[in-house]
Amino acid sequence: MITTAETIYFAGGCLWGVQAFIKTLKGVVSTQAGRVNGTSNTLDGAYDGYAECVKTEFDPEIVTVTQLMEYFFEIIDPYSVNQQGNDVGEKYRTGVYSKTPRHLEDAENYIAGRADRDKIAVEVLPLINYVKSAEEHQDRLDRCPDDYCHIPQELLHKYSQSML
Image 1 (cartoon, one colour):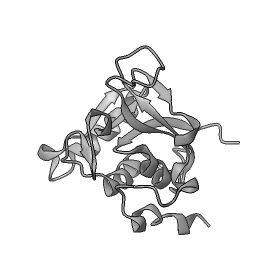
Image 2 (image 1 turned 30 degrees about the vertical axis):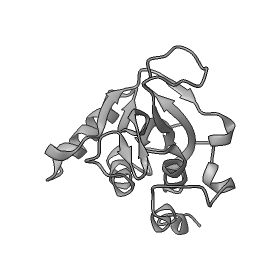
Image 3 (image 1 turned 90 degrees about the vertical axis):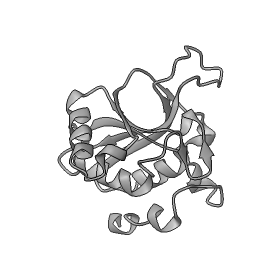
């Protein structure tokens, strides 16, 4: 059992593809589809102000936040505001969230170190709240591989072969 697992949340458009990609990465212990940093206090499905995200538990002895950011930037358009692929709306915004200040510092430093940093529209914010998505959204592309995903198939499987 990994006792050093840490948690960070990635919002990169539709959570189905983000989860399918992130869970293949070396050092990722588990993932869960959900919603982050919303304004409603109810679980009635409205998800006011929430961003679709993937709760990511990882082993920092195997993969760093900086490395996770590098992977994350492979599957998002970091310049797009409230849109990834065909998915449009506030819930499809991009962001990185955590309760751990060091994670946020690492994410901010990653962005600050990029030549295109002034164009990047990825939020880096403290985690305010999180709501787990319904079971139908958990590992959705495993069960329904023909569902729409904004992430190209070759990227979804880019790192899965190294996990074998």
